[in-house]
Image (cartoon, rainbow, N blue to C red; front, top):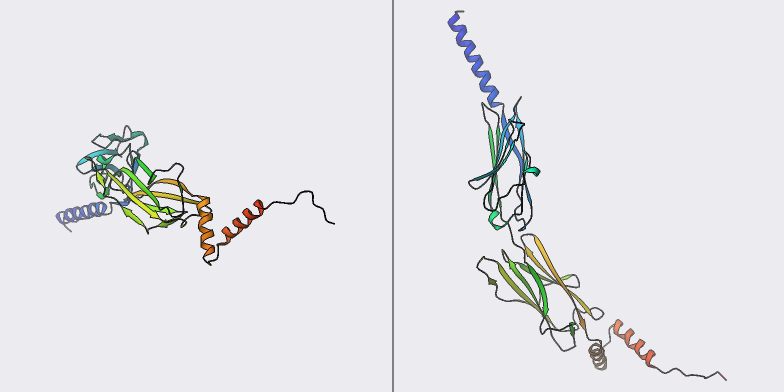
Length: 289
């Protein structure tokens, strides 16, 4: 075999070995974790789990972006000061708590929202790269959730024949809060009405819903435990209130109910019997003959 032919064979062998070495090196992003709807004011951790495939395949960089803004880079090729962070509107990195696989954002706000990208690059000369993206939308929970009686009563005591009207207001949420009523731990959808929302210049919404019913419905032993849940992006803010049924009107109602030929509920029957026995005079100083 001629020297010229041997040279060509050697070159082909070296080239194929180099191509195979490059093709054997890949970068895989195993999981990208970006909270979908974090709450305004929270610290948020973004995680990019990756795997470098191939013999002696080492990390070159991990870079994080929000839109076109690159806010964090971890350089795997240096042991001295591998972390580099950049501040943008709504983006402030807690460098000490960030690593090659995670980055911590401090005190997120509405301005933090956007499309977040993790870019992992292997060492040269191949510089294999993997990219994944996910969206984050920071929500603003209500600054206040309150339950009010209509008309205002303190303490909130109602009578038979007097309709119970309660308003629940969630102030300053973005997006608008979904309000859910519970009475005695059970969701209530009937007899609920909604008022028009109010939206301020920043897009934050104040919402009010009313629940209304006729006593003695929902009262257990003269008390109704009422809760209003304001739901925003998976976060819940709750207001609670206890309202009372006037015992005198309850007794009168049940007396009238029984006089009409209806059977008293067991609880009221027991209470009536107890009241009768307590009010009955007991003889004093009498002895059996």
